[in-house]
Image 1: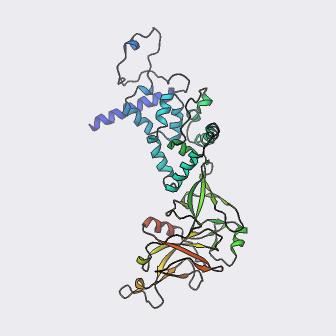
Image 2 (image 1 turned 60 degrees about the vertical axis):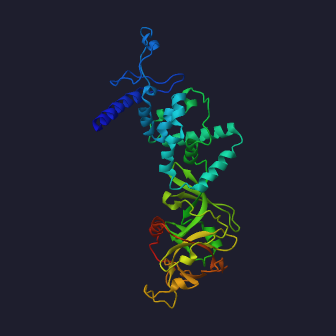
Image 3 (image 1 turned 120 degrees about the horizontal axis):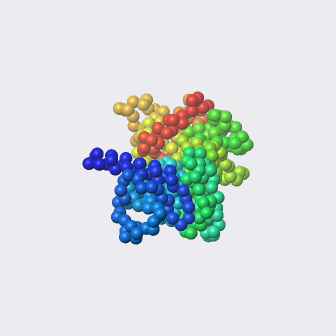
Length: 391
């Protein structure tokens, strides 16, 4: 059985190579090639046997068995699927199907796309009131995507139907996974996410106040270390980075940061909006050495950001795990060990039973708390740990 599988895929690969070499998009029919060594799976009809003398008796990729054709299409990259979709209406229907694009969507966008982004996409599709305008914008975005994709894929395989003399009889449905993939790839779709260590512009830093030592200079820019802020992000295929658009705060309207790397973006772990106090869970379960994130904002005009910390021991506890009773106290010590001992940002106290927003205009306001349950979340914060201790 294993030998038959090997022979099948060898023959299939040989057939596909010859087919793609001779494949050229043109209107009205599918590409044809001389018959390969493999016999066609379907029998020729009587009409086929009675072809006029001198006519070509070639076969197309659509003559492959269903399973073999799905295998070929399933191995194509996104630009390859777009190229095949431009060949004919039959291949277009197959190459734009959701089941072929689900894998590509998950592989590239799964780590930054969450439920909130999916809901935003549904609203984005529903708001497309003018189909012709939406299609024109989609074609513009498609061309930008093809320009970027052509660096790694032959340009002849990425021609648009309009560029190869064909009319687009049935526009791609806006709610298809392929449409969503293209909207993300071309940067037309801004989706909600969170950005680690958001950048702070110089004037914004002064507005936050030079006394706010949570700002830290690293890699040539001022940013908030070990924090994560809500934003709308858009992909830039030319640089393989993102633009981040932060919500308005204080006297500022919208702040946009460019060049955000993939490893600085995450799916929001909560559904709480940036200006709303998070309903704290697991406060009764917090124990020393637990990892947490806590909301913090400069003043009540600003949105919350999520800051990383750990649960510490009370002053009268020596840290001995056999005698520690800190988990029984109504007071919880939160420590931010990225700051030096004695820094006003090093520790804060919260009430386990009646926790609410606490703070002042000088030190900022502490909000909701979430306990980190996943090792991946804790590991990510450790990767972002600053090389120098902050003051």
